[in-house]
Structure formats: structure tokens, C-alpha cells
Image 1 (tube, rainbow, N blue to C red):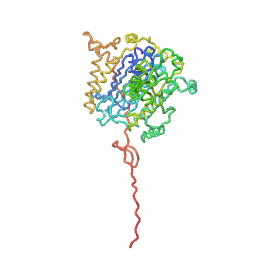
Image 2 (cartoon, helix red, strand yellow):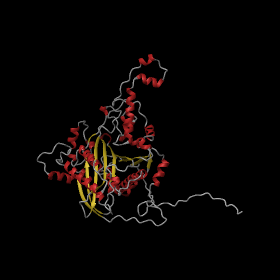
Image 3 (tube, rainbow, N blue to C red):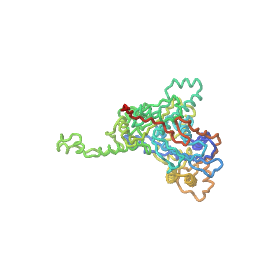
Image 4 (cartoon, rainbow, N blue to C red):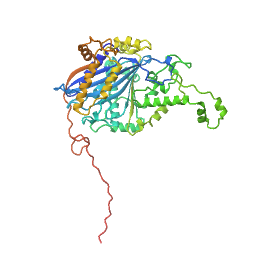
Length: 529
């Protein structure tokens, strides 16, 4: 990570948000933590402790506030995105997990909502050649519709439109498809006509997967197709989506955890991967909860007395003398192989019966992999040289922090990001007045927490010295954290009321009531007497 990466990310986001429709004032907060050691991505791995590769984690929290162009004092939070970046230096791979995306619905009238533009811009940052963290990038998310994720009580505001479960899955599929399409167009423009022909003949660089555990392929396609509104036409794309999980793909091993030393059967790349070694455990993820339960079950079975095991396996066919002679098993630890682990096919089959996937609401797992070919461009090579992959394999946090302190100017400590998230969860966004007050409180809190941070000591939580002034706080806050800018574009077109007899939304926003044909029994007329 270069010394200007945080500033470059902020500049990149501002440039994309300037294209929003309407006129308004925007304030962007970019909160990024330094790289730190990560042990929770594969907590139940079967690889011994000394043979595990080093994993790094980085937290991203992006906040966008908006106010009318003629009243900057009415600033109100409208969008927020929480992302976690995991780096695997041994395989030059990165996992981008989109944890939460939320909005308050309090967009300035006539202006465009920055939520979709913010998500697309951030994903482009992680995938474009000059700024992607590594040559192999995997974007993952779990789509689950809820009233609010990051802004408490925001669903009470009438301006917030909460998407249904199917429409949310369709929205994410469209966002990721647009990301792939735009990236392919950019590559063709950079390579020219000859490069485009070469790219068409080479294997695809993008691999897209989606899976609704409770639905079949035909049901998923039908529901996504009908999730489009009547005013939105179906757009043909060249992106191919595979209805499956990504952990059976040939390149899936690069995004898992493998031993750093060869095994008895050969190199680590030849040994089969366990589900605990290639399915990561993300925060607030149903896969992670299922993996925790499987690991706890395996440990309980391994630590169970041998007598109970033998009775369960052989019932009454083993006498008491054989049971007494059976040696008691050794308790399993993180360094021993879990013999009770299930296959990935059985894992995903059992996921369909989990409460979060079978409660009636449609939930979806989305994965997009960007596989860079062997001849990497000069910009990518330069960025890879500055990425965490070049660090020495050292288990000490102090060594990692000292090596990257210069390269991570503009970041804030991870506990500080967590504290800001906790403060955000204690605010109220139920009305416009409450949202404006909450926005002011959170902004003041961010400014206060930046007190004492310097370009060389962003990862230190030590108390600020008495010589620290408000100017130092404001400098760091305005230099790296926040950016204020004005958007002045044509407003959004007003929605025309549908003509009488047409389908779609009425002028009040409610769906037009369809005509109902009632079938009645036709009575036979009796002849007159």
C-alpha cells in the first residue's frame, strides 16, 4: 500500500460521485485501518500452526453525507459501506468481503442516491489494474434483505425504499455484472484492436458465481427475471454466471489456506483441501456459523469416551472386555486433522436447511473472481511491489507495523474504526431532524478521534501529547479522512404518471391494482310455467 493510497481512494470516490444527478453538497468520509495479522479467516484450519501462511486484514468504512446546495448546514448521512479486505501474500490473492451496505433514504429531492455509485466505485478500486491489491482478487457477499443494517431506525423514514429479498439479489447481480462489463471495456480500450483480439482468444479473466441455497437453477433464473420492474428493459450482457459455489473451481486453491511446507504425499498444491481450509469465515456470515458448529461437533466427538463411540458404532456387538481395552482418543486440536469433516457438496446441501437459507426469504451468495494472466501490466507490477505481499514472513505485529508504517499513511487504528461503527449503531435516523443531529454527532466524534494522529503514527492509540493542537487534528482529518465537494448536474427526470389501463406504479407510488375477473356459476334458466 503506497503512502498516498488512502488519498487516492478518496479522490477516486469523489471523482465518481461527482457524476450524480442533481445539485447538492456532499461530504465523504474514508476510514481505512492499517494491515494487521488475521487469525479469524480460517480459525478451524487443519494445517499445523507452524505451517500456516501469514494472513492480513484491513477494514474499510465509507460514509457519504448530503445536503441541499443552498444549505450546507442541513448535512445528513445518506449512504454507508463496510468492507473487509483479506490478503494472502503466499498466493498473491485478496478477498474483498462486502459486509454491509445501507442508506437512510434521506436524499436531497431531485438528486441521485449515492449508494449504487459508491458501491460500484469502491469495487472498481479493488479491481482496476493500477489499484487492485493483488493479481488474484475475489469479491464475496451474502445478500439478505433487512430494513436497516448500519443506520438504526432509518426504515421509519418514508423516503427509504427497502428492497425485497428477490429484488436485492437482482440488484447485487446487476451491480457485479456492470463491474465486469466496465472492466472488460476498459481493458479493450487500453489494449487496442490487436489486444482485443488476443483477449477474446484467451481464457476469461472473470469468473462469476451465485447461489440461492433454497432454490434450483430454474427457480433462481425465473425469480431474478421477474424482479425487474416493468419500466426496466432486460439488457443483454456477455457476462457468464455459474449457478454454484466458487470453491470447486480450479483456481479456488489460491483463495484458500495451504501449508507452507511440502507434505509426505507431495507438494501442498497436490493435497485435497478440507472445507475448513478453503471456506472462509466472514463476519455475520451463515457459512461461518455453520463451520463453527461443525468444528464444535467434530471436537466433541473426538473428545467423547471410547466406550460411547463403540456403542454408537457397533451397538451391542462388542462386549465389555473389548470396550475396556479400547484406548481413549486424544483430544483434537487446531494442529490435528479433523477426521469428521464433511465434503463441500454435503456442506452446501446442508446449508439449504439452515434457518437463514430456508426461512422463506430468498438469500444469495455472490462471488466474483478476477484472475490476472501471468504477464501482468507494469502498473500492476508496481502496485504489487508496494502491496503487503512484499513483506517479510514475520509473525510479530510490531515488525509488520514498523515495515508498513510509512506505506500506510492516512489510515486509522482498527479499534478506532470499530469505535466509530459502535457510535454509528447508537444513533437514531428515524426522522430528518434526528438524522441531521446524528450526522453532526458522528462527524464531531470522527474529528475528535483523529486528534493526535500523525502520518507516521496512525497505528498508535497512545494519548495525544499536550502539544497537540486543533490544527494538527484538522489537518489529518481534512488531508486523509474527509472530503467536501459540490455536485451540480441536471436533476433526475420526474416519473410520469401511468396512463389509464397501463401497468406499473401509480403517481402516488403504489402499484396499480390489476383488473380481477371473477368466475361465477351460470344458472340454467327454467322454462316459464
